[in-house]
Amino acid sequence: MCDENQDSSPGAGALSPENDYMTSCAKELALLALMDKTGYDMIQVNGQRKYGGPPPGWDGPPPPRGCEVFVGKIPRDMYEDELVPLFERAGRIYEFRLMMEFSGENRGYAFVMYINRDGAQRAIQMLDNHEIRPGKYIGVCVSLDNCRLFIGSIPKDKRKEEILEEMKKVTEGVMDVIVYPSSGDKTKNRGFAFVEYESHKAAAMARRKLIPGTFQLWGHSIQVDWAEPEKDVDEEVMQRVRVLYVRNLMLSTTEETLRQEFSRFKPGSVERVKKLTDYGFVHYRHRDDALAALGLMNGAAIDGAIIEVKTVV
Image (cartoon, rainbow, N blue to C red; front, side, top):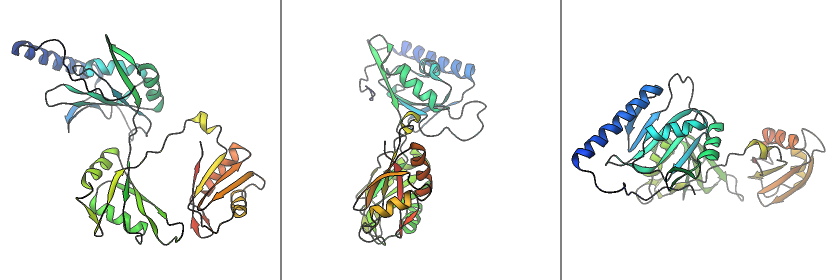
């Protein structure tokens, strides 16, 4: 099970000041030896110790989402000199972040980012429920790395451009705002929006600033929470995709209109269509046609409404 270990017992018996000092020196020497061997840098900031990020010789942007794993149930007296070599078995590490207490112990969990998704997947397969010490098992699972916030109770007359401008004024790292029009009146929003940030850290800082009861937008108290992260779909699942989910449709749009629009690039490719209020499902006969339609129709206009299209998996 992949969760944070709350057992903070350091082990048998308290150390004398002399032994405590010797243990601390031994830990520091072990970390220095690790850095000397690998060439990675290590810094401690904001309650976490970062190893790498980027690694030596790295040229280019950080790895994409899906390359990071969460590690829980780490013994509190275990550090990078033991953990890094273990996780390097799965692939090259881009960054290792160990959460730290003021006492010098770790907080029982860490995040490991690999240079690609294959490394992250191998780490989960190899090391989840791994016995790291006698009777001590770690948990390893995909890190959500959420970069999106849900903002509720916003005035329904505000347009996307206004919301984007306001969020950029009050928070840093805003990349985009997703606003869904009301099903009954496309000139108004539904009273909420999703704000996309450049990183999980930027989103977390914004969430802290926008805590309900302490912040207002346009004179309204707002609701703020993490948005449910979008799931990464693996290639094996994508091989089976033949159904598209379509949202933000006009109430007056018919199933026949959807069939015509979604088969315009290849007549006869749509098997069936089902529409429910302002959303619907389009079933294709072949996967390639469904994926082609996804690229062509996402963001297209039907009966004056800009639609959003996603795969159904």
